[in-house]
Image 1 (tube, rainbow over the protein chains, first blue to last red):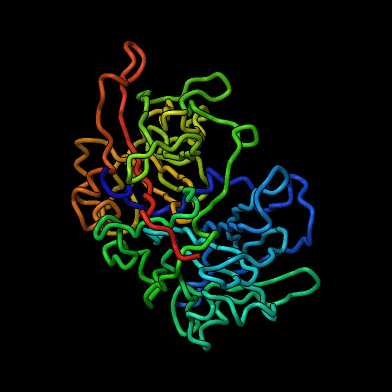
Image 2: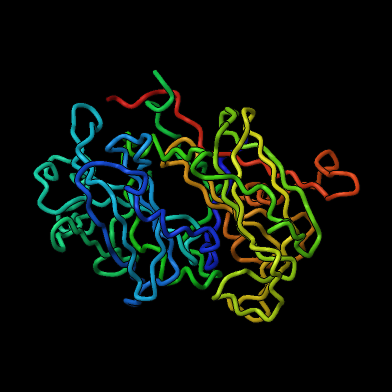
Length: 172
Length: 234
């Protein structure tokens, strides 16, 4: 077989796929600690992306009838995205390690020929210090993956595509 | 060792476009300037979302909306989704979107001065069958101008989105048409270094898919990442 098919940009018109309901991962009746995760996506000149597709995926809680683990949201005219989901718990990592609660986050947009993968962790979570992925990142850049509390059950993270605060993006 | 315990292989060199592609101007302020951090694939990367067809109903004909035929050249697109090891991937969701036959998207931000078609929404969704095969009917999308450079036109293309068996197999691609003179001028198509890899984005005209007196057929096979032979050490 040939290698994997080449990626191409999602472009500016991907909203033909958009279903705003997909931003709520609890819509099928999932139970657990419901949180919102909001954020902005910011380019190299500090401008908000207003045409981006943001996707999240979490392997915990395990996907089932009432929880699919996947969400998609558009950035709005202010560059903001917002998800409602269940706060994930820890997961096993390589070897005997334990991964801190995290959500995989993907940015797809005009100008990105290959989607960008990162992870969102929760600021102040006790397991962060031992997380095998966070430990691979220099301490001064780790905070780019940490959502900050923004009120009860609300978490916020800004994604910087370039610049001094550039988010750590992952090759997975 | 079951499949989800095996990590996906790295992408073959040259098979994927580089986000730092100056000829595609929108990349300039959006591509990361620092190298990506390669992480071990954990359960987060080796597994992925599952889309039950019951909750995500198929829309396999884009050419008919509310019982009315869209304008344009009706076509059938069919192919298989496999991984790099040739494993068929049944039950894989494909999301599809495209411009209409005049080269206009049914999208508020598309300001191209070409007519909208009230009978063409341009979005679809299909699932692969037990053999990993898929098929949808649509109209051939038109070429359209864009602002990337002087007299820039996108070649005819259909956008396709797939998830595959894991978070690490996510793929957004574009299917092009054989013989399109715009391909040689398109910085998005040309962004993939290996000619062989980008030429696989061009569908193949196929008389076996063509339905007599109905529509021309194009074959577009899609390959997702394969698994490594050895598990990771957890």
